[in-house]
Image (cartoon, rainbow, N blue to C red):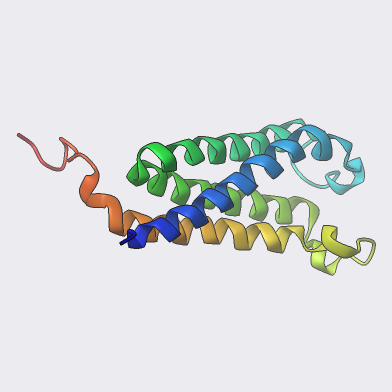
Length: 148
């Protein structure tokens, strides 16, 4: 009989793998080519910091993929953090460039990317929490919480 956590782990592997690939690719090839007028009213003078931030989100998700395979409880906690990082990145993006769903100059999938990644980040965090609830007994006790 298969573990009930297996489906959750597979879902997290897919979500974190998707974020790892798309965020790293976006940081390298997409963000640096975006129009400068999109950030002229925000705190950034160019796309360097947003590209590094997106690359960090993707790199962290890639690390979580490995953790999910080796230590599911670490991957669970990492997925929660990776999801929160994605949500924060998207909320900052919305604050700087605006909500793309309301931008009449955009069309197609590009218009809905913020919404898609907010949903993906929420999925990472929620599934990570679900996996944590089923794998936390495998985590070693923290000395701070359980002094010897």
